[in-house]
Image (cartoon, rainbow, N blue to C red):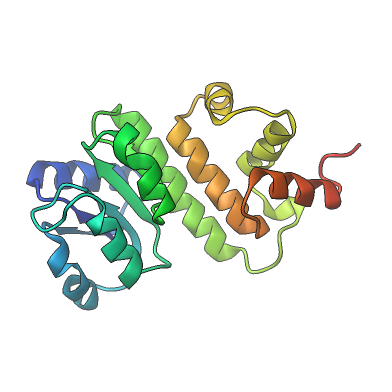
Length: 199
């Protein structure tokens, strides 16, 4: 499995590659400078585990890169790593299928933490071949369910766990996948139905 870093700035590609290796040493990372060579590069280099995409490429405009990748690789996690303002693009990217939005101006440790959530979370999801049970959830996922039950916001949860709001969103996305639900309300209903919240 391979991670593809799609960015037209060599220094940024190197920086993201180093951060990925901090999370999973030895993971194969392939750099791509334009979107129009991605498909042929994947054919040569191997199946993708994750795409890291900059919105501002020579051959993309706005959201076009997100739409193009999700159309060709709908099941591969997509992380946006860009200098584009989150207030302008984050919600649209997530709605279009991206799993996480990271601004390049963020603290490097926050970026690493967010990448860890995606890379390790994907690994956990692949290992879960049976329906979700309390023992199949990670410690962090169990924490999230309890915090959902307390009615905490993403910001509140981020502060309690000392992680970024971006990372909280990734944790929820993985939790919802694991439970087969689409919302906080459904996740809580699932938890209550299975007796995870009662005493």
